Length: 337
Image 1: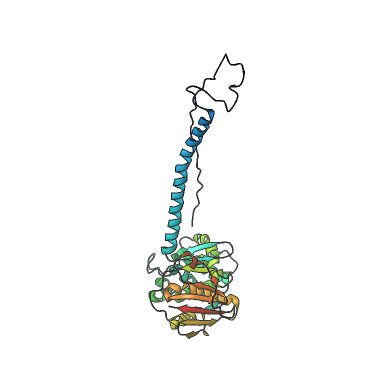
Image 2: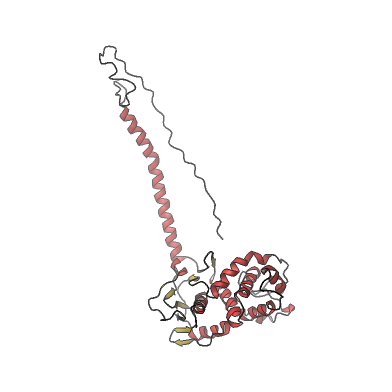
């Protein structure tokens, strides 16, 4: 999260010292008032300067103060622009997940784990998005969406499940699909889990020492769940460095089958095509593919006429118009390196 701090800048104008001028008095001059002091354009003779000289002096003094400030502003602006260009070019791998109100940044690992948790619940097990929200919020609290190999006592994995408490073997718990299924199997046994407060339901499943903490992640859990059920098109984008190895279309189709229960995906060369059946389901699959792009060496994902293309700049957070649409808003095409 980004905290925003208000800053007050106190500007001080330049300090001017004005010379005291004696008014010119010519008692012999018959044109009284010609050299009157009240005249702003009066000319002072002898050793005195013209009033216009004083104006130029004040202008020069003001410019002398403003020009260095302007120069510093240009240097600072150029430095910020350069910094932006550098971070855009070599920034770290990050993903954004958003809905119509919120926008969160995560690592590719975290987003991939959330995608797995989400589709196991909604697609593989046929549960509601509410179940996915509860699972995501719980995993954020327990592991920050990381598949941890250690924890309190013998706790492991995304949900910090314990072998000694009957959640399975260590190897099973470290499998995100198994861990997610185990969580959902326990969730549906909680009475009124669909309507009770999220933190109460999560606590009934987890038996945590911090029962109120799950509520802190309710909004994040909802944003992740609705992104991966396809409710919000173009909701997931990742900026990633170039793929480092060849991708395997077969590995992607196997993963889709294991995590989301999708059995009709086809491969051709480096392409995987998924006829999703509906536009919302297509966005669910498309977001899942983007979230797994780093681990599966995916270079582009096209949903209908929208495309996500792998790139290391900030543009990778967004979708664009596809140069080669799939021909249907319910069809997804995944391209691998």
